[in-house]
Amino acid sequence: MSELSEKAERLETLAREKARRAMSIEGLRKKIPFYGESGRGIGYHEKLEKLHRDTSLLFQRAAEQWEKTRKRNNALYDYKMSLEYAWRPGDKERLQQKIDELSQSKYRRGLFSSLSIIFLLASLFFVSFSLTGNAIASLSSDNLTLAGTGLFILGLVFTFFYIQEKKK
Image (cartoon, rainbow, N blue to C red; front, side):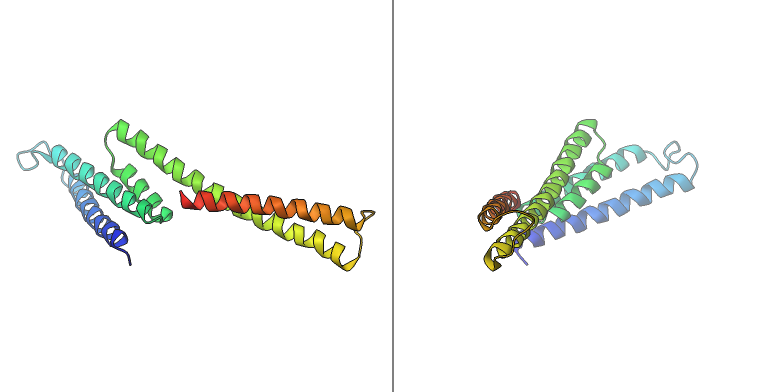
């Protein structure tokens, strides 16, 4: 495992521990009436806000490390967790934009890979008939070769787009 992956896992572990502490404080508030209003609970809101802020930051840093290692699914998960613990509206908007960007990238890669496979297989279909001398409908062998070549080129173009999207 690379150094960046190990760092991302450490950050994610720290963030999960902070999240557990934040949840335990929230649970304590639900069990004890007026917790935070009596002398025992002074500072509850500030403590909880700090825990949420720290948790959100740790998840963000872990997500950034995952992005550097090109593990987008892990980064997407950590950004979603960071969004869950974010308190400030500006942070929430920025995190939502990052999540949307990563999700769109994932769908684009899937689209490009599917199209490249479909076009490459279709080109093989058309070229194979022209090689064996069989005709499809009333198309001549030359037309089949031309159609197969065009589909092959389209398949290569979508393969190129897929590779470019994967490099990002």
